[in-house]
Length: 545
Image (cartoon, rainbow, N blue to C red; front, side, top):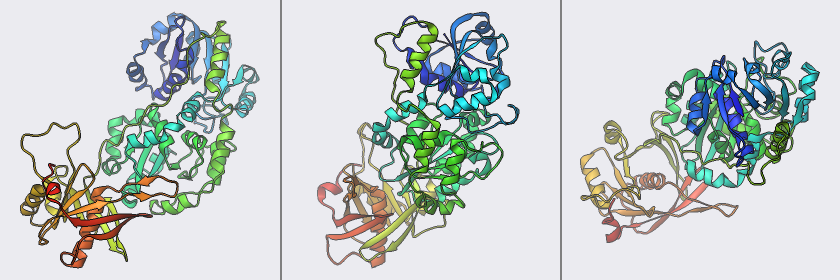
């Protein structure tokens, strides 16, 4: 059996269906790269990454196969000998691409589907009955070979929904809103039309309230290279944005997401099928989107994003309904696709499926951001019960009340400019050093070594924070308590954020508080985290950091 792909994105679609033959030792799974695509550069490395055996194109054409499975009819695919099966290459047929025939959706150009004596198409699997009608519009014979099986990639996402909290933990989202951007490829994509949008969102949205992620079409990665893409996105990545991997990980990130910004690419339909959460449009017209397609219908009914600074209003304007309805128009047999495909493929082979073998494999956990900001401009205001803070990565916004810098992670220039220096505890796996600071010893060292620093905070493994303020005498402990959500969950604030709030409150008072302990609130977004400020105990001051 040969899996034939022209590009990395086509290969990833095939990898989602390979498990339909799980446990069958009668099947030999081979891969080849169909030449001719501008986006094939990453496909062979993707085959190597999964440990598949790949055949050079000339050798692949010299053999005969019981089945050739592809997710695109383009290129020299008909040269491969054997019965062919075509799978959906995305969530429906929403775009038309120049050069693929007039008025035809990408992947449905009749010139690519009529074989004229070449290797026959035994099955054209589609995700929705409307797609059979689209096939019939261009080629009645192709429509007769079509069967509706659903979408195998969606099935993996639907089955993985219970892992949402695990995915968010892997991404280190915490109580933040995970806002994900999705960009298709081509001149009308989000990243081509609004290349500065990720950086503008990172500058506008407070770090403790929002986490950003970006899903980029594999074709765009192939066009640029991952290195070039990361260099272009450096301001947003430096601010902590997640760049989701092109295989599997992108779907895990969509499951974890709380809100979505999309262009006209079909990845948004997977997000909408998983749950009806806010989605807004960053598509600003063009010639690629096909009228009446599921994405066209969705984009007409959801809020449109103007300036990046208006993103909160756009998300609040979303009303439930359009997302789920668009997904229903794109995907039939939700949750049944892999078993339906398994039945059809074994029927083409003339074999009975093995009794054992599960074609469904859950999506893996996504990786956290490669980079995390280590210095923040902290904007703050005193409230009746405490302090409201908003931290943004340094350099993305005008200076705030003070600069908070993580000691040992930021450079010397930022460290010397800090109003608050904070130190995080050693990782649990770190070997205990022969020589280590006590929490208060380090705080005193920081204040003596950096004269411009007003406060030094040593975060303990327990989440408590030892805070020493210049001119205040003995150290304090900042004890942040969780915030109870209405749904029964509890949210925890970053101790560095609450240290900044107490730093602001103490400086506003002009000196040490007249009595301790003191209770105040650290307001981050819509949450007011209770904070207790008290004198540090001797064992807390001596805790190793």
